[in-house]
Image (tube, rainbow, N blue to C red; front, side, top):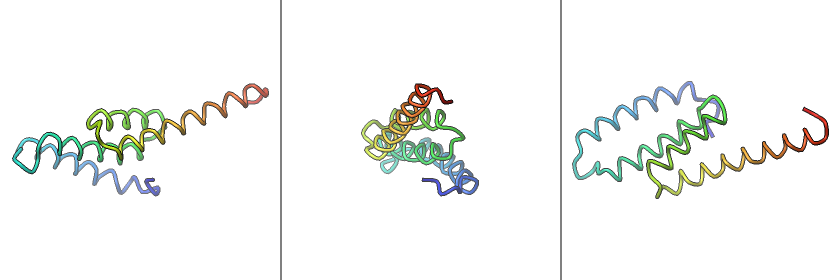
Length: 101
């Protein structure tokens, strides 16, 4: 997802969030609350893929969906992360059931 380039992506994301705040303050016909919410939601998805661990990734994805519940992209990405977490938990439980850690 992030192609191991978060060190490059994070400064751009920081700048994009800053510009988004400026546009939110400006308002206007192009930057409606719904369009701002969609942009912010998409930026949060990108930020989530640069999180340091899966728990933080999940929290940020949740925020992305909260910002714009109609954003199918954010919903799909969040569901993908949720499936990864569930699969990981199942594998961990199976290992523990077999006496491994």
